[in-house]
Length: 75
Length: 160
Figure 1 (cartoon, rainbow over the protein chains, first blue to last red):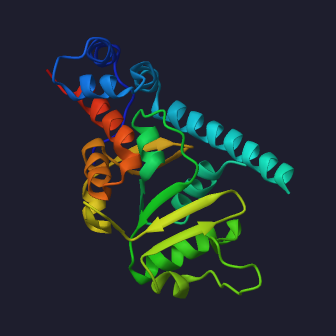
Figure 2 (tube, each protein chain N blue to C red; figure 1 turned 180 degrees about the horizontal axis):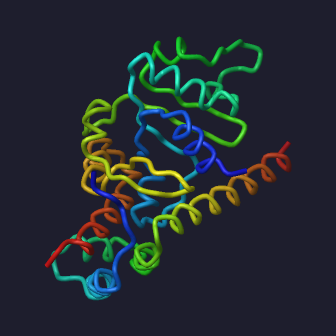
């Protein structure tokens, strides 16, 4: 079974350079032109899967709490 | 409370056959897109339905949108009656799917997944090409940006 591991420094550097300087016609270039914030993808790739999961959980909790407050205030 | 961690730990500890799909899978693979619920693909064999029902029972799952006055019993029989369950729980929303558009049944989904160790547990999550295939198959306009993100993540990590 394949395993999702953090990128090695070399893998991350290669990914970072591709995201910073997309080749014309690439999917990365298409994403940049569409308005995708590629720096966020670099940030995601820099982290370990554990850190990515913790971040996702933290954002979800904050959003959930905010929505709860908004719902209470709208009643 | 921690929805992702609680659900994943409960299912791992109960030996549920499942794969993380959707937004959380994208997050695990590097996407920074906000995910409000958590999506799992599950095996529909009888033993797994029993384990799944038992694992999530402490979170008090209930069909989302079901009026509170209507009864709902969460057990393996309820799970055997459908392939898609959109649930609200004490900790947040969980979606359970027995099949994923663009990928197929649980066995197809499992074949295109990758092991990850998070929350002190090792479990399966969709890999990037599979997640992209699922997004494309869903064909929702709102997924266009997410699709471009996932394709960028894949392209950025491709070998030379």
